[in-house]
Image (cartoon, rainbow, N blue to C red; front, side, top):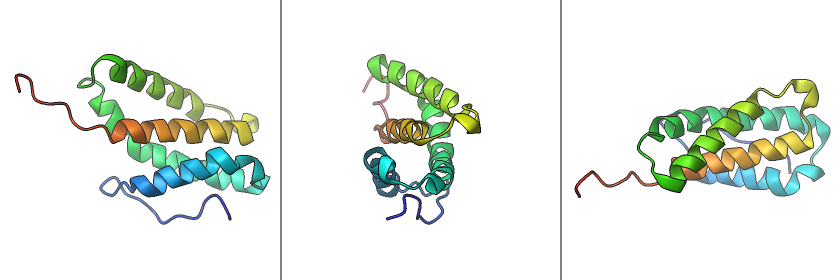
Length: 118
């Protein structure tokens, strides 16, 4: 099965199940993928990251403790992964981006913290 066959998503519609299943497929089956699929799958993951990163970045100030540290680390790693030159992108990079995308999804899904004094 090709790695990158999904409908378009918009910021108003984050399909967590689709993102998670795509990331899982890439993480566990990337070595089985054809090299020609890497670019299209990477573009797909970049799209997911584009949907999730603004939300996670925006929530960074409200997160506390380990969650805040984790979010900061993931954001930094995502920015680094997005800056990798195309000639250095391959199966390992695709795997890393999928792992980071899945981490962003987890952070995106965190419930909002309780209001102060609640």
